[in-house]
Length: 142
Image (cartoon, rainbow, N blue to C red; front, side, top):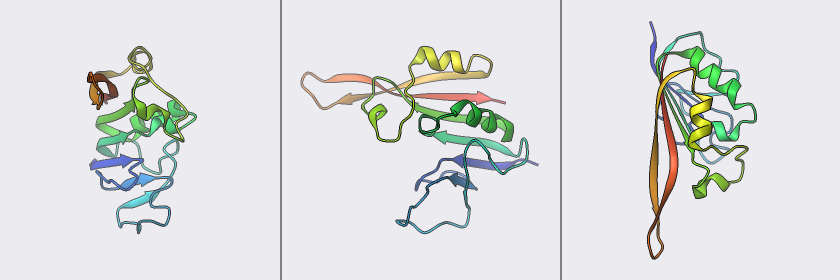
């Protein structure tokens, strides 16, 4: 029987039970009971064990993000929700990002999956106001 949810790369904002990250806390936070330190490319779970898997702003930090994506699919029996920064957003320049994504590239990456992709926009505090793509949300049915 599948478990409710998994949050891969949770950082300090946890959505799942259990939650995973490589660097969670780093001395700032205590480790929680439902936390497992692991690499997204090698998830320590059985196949098809979670109904929902969240992976928000994680894949851009992983050199071999395609391997991590395959792991997400492997452990999910339901829905995967992935958020990626858009190449035009200011968050794409954060330290530690190894990749940036545009809509065309994301469509190509997920072409073999049953999914839908939305783009979220966020305004910049400028005059005149400027609205740019912020992130892309991909929802995959497994």
